[in-house]
Amino acid sequence: MAVSSATMITSCTVEDNPSSEPVVEPESQVPAARITETIRKEEAKATVYNFEYPSVDPYGNPVTLSGSIIVGDEVEADGKQASGMVLYNHFTVFQKDECPSRGDLGIVLKVVGSKLIAVAPDYYGFGVTGDKNQAYCMSRTNAQSSVDALLAARQLLKEKGYKWGDFLFNLGYSEGGQTAMGVVRLVAEKYPDIKITHTVAGAGPYDIGETYRQLVSSGETSMPSTVISTLLAYNEYNELDVDNNEMFLDPILDNILIYLLSKDYKRDDLEGKLASYKIADWINPILFDFNSDLSLKFMEVFEKDNLSKGWKPRGDERISLVHNTLDACVPYANTTQMAEFFKQAGFTVDEGRTEDRYVDGKVFVYSVNVPALSEKTGTHEAGAIAFVAELVIVVCHYLDIKPWFSLTAEELEGV
Image (tube, rainbow, N blue to C red; front, side, top):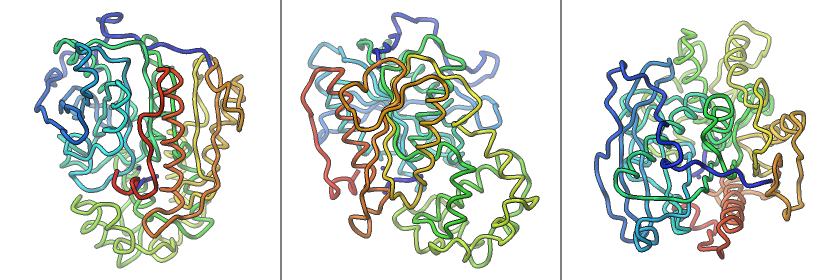
């Protein structure tokens, strides 16, 4: 769930769809979208516009959220004309300054070197809503924040004189991969005017219930922070009213507040301090019984947000699913189930034949088998390298350009 990070379907520009607005009704009293600051990233040859925009919170109430718009110098040099846009859904973060609008842009700074404008939402619980608990791995909530960010960013960019081509890439790894697939579902359900060129989703927990079952059954997770955060978010925002001491054992109860909910620590600093990798050391034994009343309560809300069932995808989507089969954080079953869902919906699901991943109704599964590379670059993080490789391949194909950057395992730790 975390990182240490077909026929062409064209996107509508603001000019093509001037009526597109965020979903919040005018009477909500939430202010209109606005740019809050402009930051120059000289080392990345890019300009960042941090912005706030209207959306909804996990309960469906109107709220102001935040994010970043990143524009590379290549766009400015071409008279503010971009090739297209990227909706970048970030991976798991815990520290308050790790979200895009607070400065942690990571790999998205490299993505804009392809002459694409990137939009990176913070998600609920970070940025302007940093005083709230994050809606961790709640794909409907986070997907809505991403789509609303995209629509608001289009309008703000238009007002600043930017133009862009028809390409729209929907990207994300880990929690971001789940969010990216949540965007595909949300757009299919509610936004006929948004056309996604290609989605590249890596190692997402698309089925939270199955993710939970597999991790608990295995007895270990490489990132206990993600399991704990999932239980906390689904409990709070589904109003299950389960006390923390019903879910967790001592001494983790105090650690949750100190190391997790405070948002003072980055993920790399959490694991080992927050909890051990052995789930039985910190989870209530009743949650090991999947038929217990408490487990069934969680499984019910997990199932409501299951991306692998219950919706109808557009027939012309183009999707790449990337995953490390050895992933010790997000079980590989998430990808096999997601692929099977699309297969049952009439899609062609293919693995290993890369030359025809760009046709209508195609899901390309890019599986890798990579062990942990170092103490910091575990199996989940190592899988992110394959995700980066796939997004570069996809973008280069559509834009007809050569690879504009590469990423080693060592560089990955820095982004």
